[in-house]
Length: 497
Image 1 (tube, helix red, strand yellow):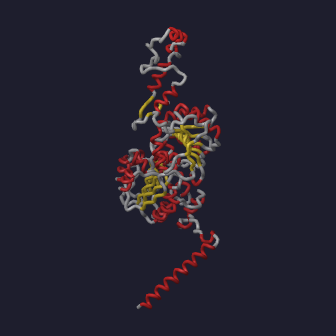
Image 2 (cartoon, one colour; image 1 turned 120 degrees about the horizontal axis):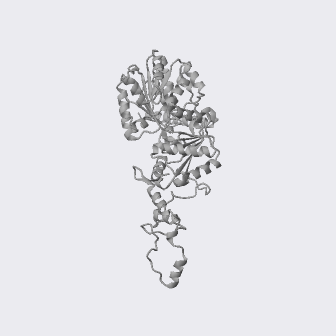
Image 3 (cartoon, helix red, strand yellow; image 1 turned 45 degrees about the vertical axis):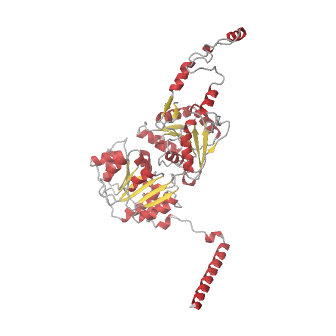
């Protein structure tokens, strides 16, 4: 009995020794012999017709989201895919869907439905599908509002098997019984957080009623807050979760923060653009009016600039986006309509002229540059009123955004912590009134009604110009400046431009 135990122990020791010797020999080998081979699209065993589309798009190595999502989709599993923008989510679901469609029976019915929140994103996805499926014979059509219904109907009825649609126009077609979704095999909700968060949830639930209920469902997004994730998982059946650092911009993006007040932003922007080599620049504003106005000012300053915002017709929006893609316009000023899923290669710089209202919006904006492992830069113009959202963004990033201290570019320091015991508001008013006569609470001179202490003091007072003789209209301008202050829903103050 004892002898058997000792034999077992000696055998275990010999095994450990052999393992250690193997490890020693392996670590002594050249690195190229022990490094794991890089994964390629060939390992997915796609149909040769799909491989031709992959070569057309110059895809070589799968991104992390593609590497993890494609096998699960090929198996027919539902997916909840969370990854940063610019990491290849579109190809992650298009390629395996094409493979499954080629294996299944071909028909002239809609077999795949992809729902996207914006027209531009729907058009972008449709363009990617066209390239990847060129050799397969599978056709797709983009369905969205702002254009005529009849051309869309003709394409669908002529045999398009994939429909990429925005919720509103899709429901219009379904109510008109233009086509049916009872043969749909795959449902994709792209930018799912945006659709749910921006009020598309009732439309999505209504669309689900037209589906057979047996379809494979895929949800992809760059961000997925917990309350939205709960809603998303209601439409998934035992999903595979694929999550790849989705809450932060890619590491290839260098981020800088400029402290500047609203009335100095245009000067700062021109200074940065004059000093920085910008191949292609995307500038974000909060409002449609400011996007249009800023693009007009940059155009007058000699830059080839255009705007992309919701007030434009679909034809003008597409013209602006296509011109930016082709390099006809070096600067595109846009609202957050361009922050979601617009894939424009070669954007070297993203500028947040206005700080976004949410952390997710910041992630999507910054994700427009540094795509496909390329390097990019993101500049953010922040004023005193943006301290709260900047803190939230930095907590999400897990680090402080680099502050730009170039005195020629950033002249004020509104985001710095005020000195202890001195309120920031009081010191700001002192700086504001420097070199101007002091006023009391009612807007009049602070020394009104004060008597001279002596004759000499009275003479000095007569020698001084009266505070009433300040520049005409200054009191009215001060009232206008106060009236120009507006408060947003969160209680933060914003200067009206």
